[in-house]
Amino acid sequence: MKIAIDAMGGDHAPKEIVLGAIKAIQHYSDLDITLVGDETKINTYLTNKERIEVLHTDEVILGTDEPVRAVRRKKNASMVLAAQLVADQKADACISAGNTGALMAAGLFVVGRIEGIERPALTPTLPTVGGEGFLLLDVGANVDAKPEHLLQYAIMGSIYSQKVRGIKNPRVGLLNIGTEEKKGNELTKQTFELLKSAQVNFIGNVEARDLLDGVADVVVTDGFTGNMVLKTIEGTAMSVFKMLKGALTSSLKSKLAAAVLKPDLKVLKNKMDYSEYGGAGLFGLKAPVIKAHGSSDAQAIFSAIRQAKEMVDQDVTPLIRKAIE
Image (cartoon, rainbow, N blue to C red; front, side):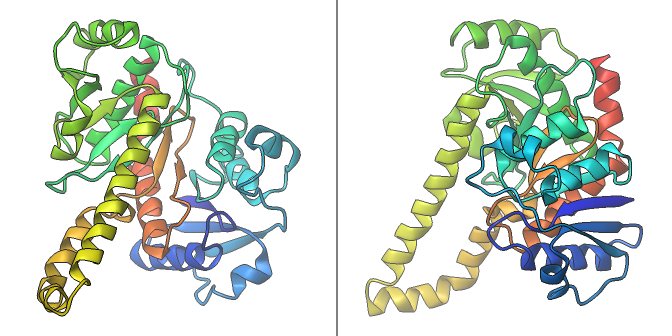
């Protein structure tokens, strides 16, 4: 199996991307990686070249670039070339921690959609209190959505949860303002009816306040709502840890208590760490495309590689194609 990685995307590129790739090669004996980017910068950190090759380019899509225009004009950008390797069947999947909009554009225009998929979904796995995590889709690939799109999200999310996350019969919930069947706007009401008759384990409407308690394994919503939920969860988690840190360093007594609690606090932080879950998959494309977090370190890149590899190993894309047909 070969995975193409945009080595120049993200806040800590190329160092953390290269270190994550090296870790993956050491962990998986059946994996080959192509790092796409500036060869000189990559080789600074590439201490192990076993089953890792470099495709050189000095063109990069920046976070400030307009996504669609950048993909169309910067044909030799590291992100675009990584997607092109997938399109040319020289790689089975691609990963980038770079510009999210540009990666979605590269996925659509270069890799291409599965026939029958109207709108691909950007899909992260988010942490829960119990540590199981849940899949949220869509979180921004499409601001507007139709009931049929959310139905496809549910199908794709169920297949991924079964094959990659190992959940036998994933519970699918529809994000809404209440759990009652008749709650919500026209989108959620019509989607509810579609999901009731779909071949997924639909458990009904779920509320945002219950997401981190693990109320469902797959939660579907439109990209506008999903993106706001994602940013709210991220912001709240950061704020809570800041407040906790402030409280535990406010006095000598609290500092002593913090020293005692440090191992337990580390466990708590790791439980809520996005890097353990991999990146956000762009579901509905002809091959796996993974968006790693912009601030990804080597561990997060390794997790994204593991995620992409499992999607290929478990035939997630062919199974989605068959289900949609």
